Image (cartoon, rainbow, N blue to C red; front, side, top):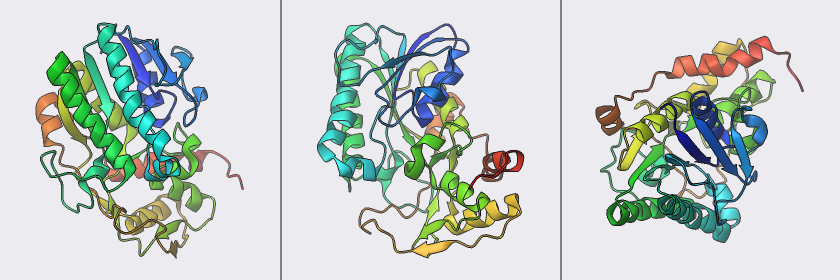
Length: 311
């Protein structure tokens, strides 16, 4: 993608800022973010940052393509204020797409979630039945249904990407998420600092950990190919939390034991395992993950090998 005008909502957040910075090298990029979850310090100077909310009127939607990533992006965030979560995740999505359509933009790429598959140890494709066990999942499914409407009624290209456990690490744009950061980032920071990472239950739960650089490439390809429908973005391989702790200890040269704690989340909503079948994305765009688990662990730990440790 080159020479395009681009709007990234939620673009000061973790994934959004990585996308905006990548695109801004050869495109005109506007970021809209209310800074409730993101920070403009994540962004390069070449990005045009606007502190705005996706529920507002007169958003800067006169662009070639919209990447809609703004959301309350976890179970905990949504449950703390369900009505706000619904407004931001659903009404905000509809508001941005309607304004983009009215401004003449016909290509939208938006964030959905892999949580709607529930617990799946084996790779799961987009055709697998999905459920809404939480308000967060319901809001993302609502986006997908509205996207179907926009595609059918307006003829827009509406690509919904179901992300699988996206990470980067505290040395980059994920740090501001704190307790909402991916467990890989949290565990790495704990172990490097000599703290015992807290693992829910017995640590056997698994995730399909996908590096943010691979997610950004998928987002860009979805826009370039004007995809329509829903697509998984994941590696197709999952690792347990116990395996993560072992791998981090090996890479960091440490021997920090985890602390196993009772899972504070209800069993009927906690996703124990995730694993993506991204065949559809590969077939339609050529995308495949380039950063495997071992390489991701090395990238994650590099900051702790080059920078002095802080308490």
